[in-house]
Image (cartoon, rainbow, N blue to C red; front, side):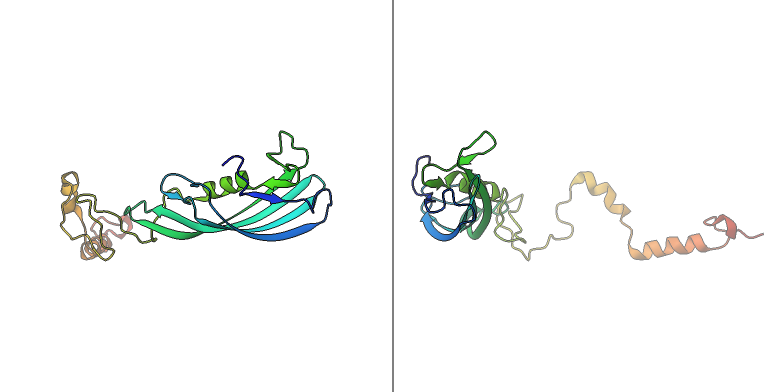
Length: 195
């Protein structure tokens, strides 16, 4: 995307005029795929930009709000889905870029592609889910689980845990233990022994 004129924004009317400000809206198509892995903005997807360009002594301060649609694969059930996506960034484009300044004013324009790409790609979800309560895939069959499906009691129990199944105490068992401790002379409370 380097050298692409798609993301260039003219700042001719702002150069060396501290205090001047312009607001602009643009809609453009992504010239190539943004992002990798499970979430991305595909080539040709519409990207809406709300820009605020402010002239300052050091250069042009760009504040942007980016809106687009993210295409993703659910990290739990592997279904493809799309979702609205919004991210903001603010960057100073310096007149005379130094090592501390990443971006500069090039003639009468600024190139929004590097900060826009950084903001979008870094804000994409690492493990997207199609919905918060997505049950995912069944680990044994690989089939999609139903959200309402409940694990059946006595389902395949890991044999390593089978020995502990007998130690399960119900609420009535616990009540009996408390009563036994409170009986005089039972040894549960040393101060309650009969004299």
